[in-house]
Length: 346
Image 1 (spheres, rainbow, N blue to C red):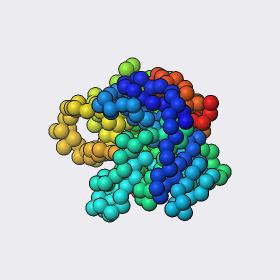
Image 2: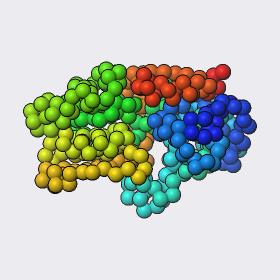
Image 3: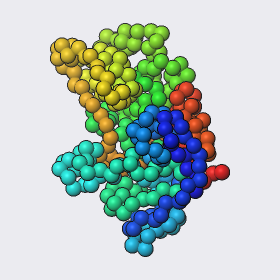
Image 4: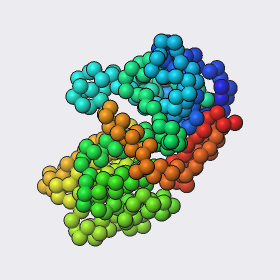
């Protein structure tokens, strides 16, 4: 089969490798669509595997069952499936408390062979946990790839209670920022303000319900937000980017009693200097968000494949797997919102 194999930072090669064997109690998925995620790009352009190469990434996986082990009666050849990458054990204390995003025994999807390949092995453990979802026949497989990135956005907004009448600031107009804008509008937010340093990305966010855009390189974002909100500030501020400077500035964009979310991960080891006196006297809530619990994963999938979610607006580029390096560059430059790759398309 063909796969995008990583040999080191930014060294991604399209190669022929052996097709994975069908796991006992599992299945082999023929990958027909897979999203190119920002975390994939970060992993593939850095020494993420600490020298342990070759490796195959890719975790926004959609396809059809190509082979099933005889002891796997739940699925059959031809079934259309979406595979959530991090299967939760559903038995540990965190899972039982409703926080399976903090599962103590999750499947390690980074260590497994990923989906940037023609075929992907799904284990019995993944099937018996909460990682496999059947895609309705009337739904585009490309649309279903958005289920994974949408899951964390869905969980975040549910957890902080974005609701009718809210003013929401989103810092970072990448794919995740665009998801946040669209979902905030679906949840009833009255005003969505996008802060970004790339004018092309800012222009694209209008289609996702963004009411105001601010290029923070050209104008003072805090002053502009205060002007828009009559000097009140936003109800919720979501920093969806890898910048410590953005996190430090985000607290000044929120109203008294507002919520500030640190959604995007920053480089490991980097520290953020926060004015805790300002946080204290303005009764701000600081929320660190990562992942989604099991039921939020399911609900995000159901939303992504529903008519209520405009998946076609997010997917700006569809490329064959062999063009993965082009997809990486399109995403890094800001020209693409979301790239979907098609393995098995030679």
